[in-house]
Structures are given as structure tokens and as C-alpha cells.
Image (cartoon, rainbow, N blue to C red; front, side, top):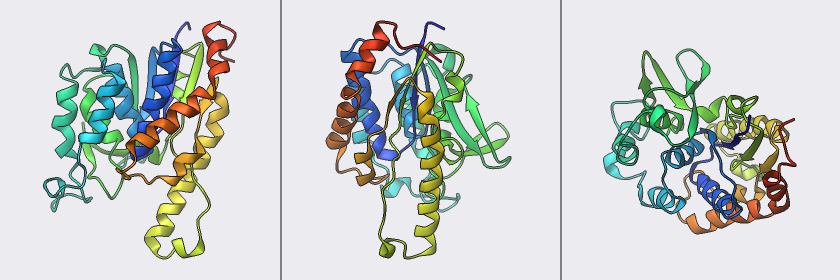
Length: 261
């Protein structure tokens, strides 16, 4: 129970804010030993657990093109072929096994055949991160074993459960806020479905944030889209500043004043 755990939510490109938060935590001397992440949080968590620096992970986000013609699929459900990104993950996680990671990692994905959420912590890392990040409709499902998996955020966008009872303190970073929209923004069946999914994910996450010893959830991120690739630096800074606002709590954590309930 002497470990510090970190929960990283999904949120697409807004996941870069995780890197800002981690940067401040490193400056404070906070050493995370266990990570639980979903979707973008699984990418950041997986790369960080593999030993990559924040700078390297930031470059991976910035340099990986999503909507290039070579990534589109005509034979799979979804617009983008998830398997196109497998080599990118393998390149940065060459020793592709959970047991080889430098930090304990849990990755959450949604089993769409059986309608359940699955948490992976053993076996191949890259494939589970790929599955956890496969946003429905946009990315094709990923086959693992006998089932198909998509974005873990569909059923659990803030996977704190694997850390409960295993850590003396839990830090949570949520990068999936919502904001009010105008009536004209809800103009089609697709926008209604998207809005409802966002609301469901947000309220599911909001109920879990109080379970963290330190919760970071910058509302400013609601101004950025899931696939908004034009504001990496701003999103990073938002995560850093949001974590910095918790400086006093991090100091208490270092001193052992903050402990798991």
C-alpha cells in the first residue's frame, strides 16, 4: 500500500493535458508507480510506464497523423483502420509485454461482442492500447483473443477501480469535461448521439473524481475537440497549470499527510 497510483481518462487529443499534469508532478518529486488508463489515457500511461519521457510522448502525439488517406479503411467497420497505428506503438514499446514495463499498468477497453468492460494487465501491451483507443465509428474495432474491442471510455472513461485498495494515494486526471451547447449545435441525429455519449461519460467520471486523493479536471479543455490537432501546446499548458493549482495537496502527499481513505 506504499504506492502512488495515477488514473488517466480518455479524451482524444486532450490527453496531451495528461502530459502537462505529469510534468508538474515530476517537478514536485511525485513518483507514480501504478497507472490505470483508458483511450488517450492508456496511450500516455502505456508510454510512460514503458519509460518514455514526457517530451517523447508529446512528440508521438504531435507527429502521428490520424486522418491521412493511407489510414482510411473500406473493408472494416469504422472510418480509420486501427491496425495502421500498431507499428507506431510497437516501435515505442519494443518489449511488448505488461511484465516488461517499468510501472504497473492497467488498460481498459470495451468488449463490444459481450457488452462488458475489460481491464488488461497481462500479455501484449500495444494491442490493448490500440483497442482502448479505438473511438467507436471513427476507428475500426480491434480483435484480441475471441472478441472485438473499442474505446474503453464507452463504459469506463475514468478507470479508478484497478487502483482502489492497491495504493496509499490515488491521483486522477480527467481530460473529458463538457460545456453547454447551443440549440443549433444539435442539428442532426449524429450530433444528438455524440452529445448524449459525451454527457454520459462526463457524469460517470464526475461521480468518481471524489474517490481520488488529488483530482485534476480542467474545465477549459471543453473548448477543444477530441481530434483538435492545432493546439497541442495550449492543451499541455492547461494540464500543467491545473496540476500546479494542486501544489499544496501534492506537498501534503509527499509528506505522507494524504493517504487513501
